Length: 256
Length: 256
DNA sequence: TGGCAGCTTTTGTCCGACAAATGAAACCGG
DNA sequence: CCGGTTTCATTTGTCGGACAAAAGCTGCCA
Image (cartoon, rainbow over all chains, first blue to last red; front, side, top):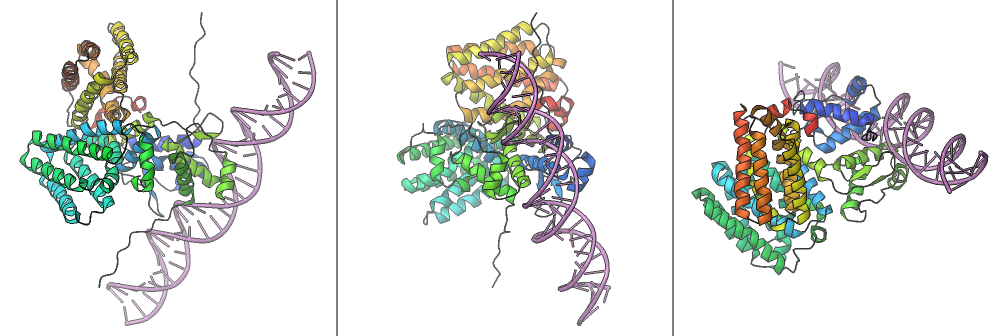
């Protein structure tokens, strides 16, 4: 007979157990966002471990985004913040050597999905926010600060995703959006007519949203994203190059 | 005149600076996956801070998934692990009180996207892996252990996403997949014919993949995911209920 | 050569201590 | 009585040192 095969026994460290215990409290709903987790001294008493150990556990939770320490004061449970997670995802993608083609293909479908869902669910306040973004872009088209344009483009698509009323979708599209839209800056520098085309597309998207015209929205979104691709190639970039190479030359700190 | 309004100055703590410094090394590529980051003693020397401080910084990186400590030994840079990130995304969604309707709507489009991309990019080895999964499912259909069935379904869709050849897409779909497919277990318990319908759909998807028939693949994927929805409702669940309620009654530990 | 004992390195945990920042309470002047 | 100011206690961030357990390495010996 063959010997039984055992999985390696993983003995969790004390600091991990502290983190997991608190995490269970949060995930089970016994601790709700805004609640105080307690001071380090309390946790030391409750868990019966040293303060250093408690602190290491807290760091894990802090990075998970489950708890937050406000400047000087007590530890409390965080409302879930997706932005932090999305940027980590983006980083993982960069490290994983994904190519712009992958990012582009995913963005194309994700953004079309977003705008189609937005057609069904956008409220007036969502549309107002998009209009405000558009006004900023139109008023600044002459100065044409590329990094500002890129920021507005990123924001526009984030607002659109928000208007979809689907937070799962909103979250799913964010990692790729964080990678692709900031490169608009690079494109704007090389392709002068880029900003104008962007504004035109955004205008059409808003109008389609108002008219609840799904076909028109999808068509213009496709056109808009493919415009990005053309600009990217016209700027002399290779779609099959890993994202890493391109991102490096932008300001990485600003991205994440 | 009005006084200038300043943003709050955020002074990073020493442990955060340690984490950020190492993170920059990794993101810039100077430290590559597999490289040694160095011992705590070395970092203490290099940064000129106390060992406790270094350790807290390391905990941040550890939770980010950027570094890993193997069993007992030296700290080294990790290859990016998406699973860890996806499960944290899922947790954030649960905490954010998203509803199953949101998860379902997102899953429907994401899975269709995945299978369509797989039609274009799947290799023989991808299809072989799917076949192996299908054989397992078919051979176990009689015993019909619901949790096993749910696992196979989850795996099937993960394999399909892998076959899409697009890691961005693969990552984007994972958080919602982690929430939706495990509930198949619940459905299998209440809806006896569920497992059979699942296997049929998977079979059709594999065949469509072989035939490179995108329309057929999309049709069956839509049917398959909507089957999930029907089963979910037949099991007496409300699509507009927050995910939290349902997940709680499964085994949360097994999910994440 | 192979295996075992002992040493070294490294991590996990603990203890005690202090400065800075913060919130709260006491205090004081009008 | 109220508003502002000054202690004062609490809490966090950081430091220094210490020790046990585990993992790697070395050298000895059969």
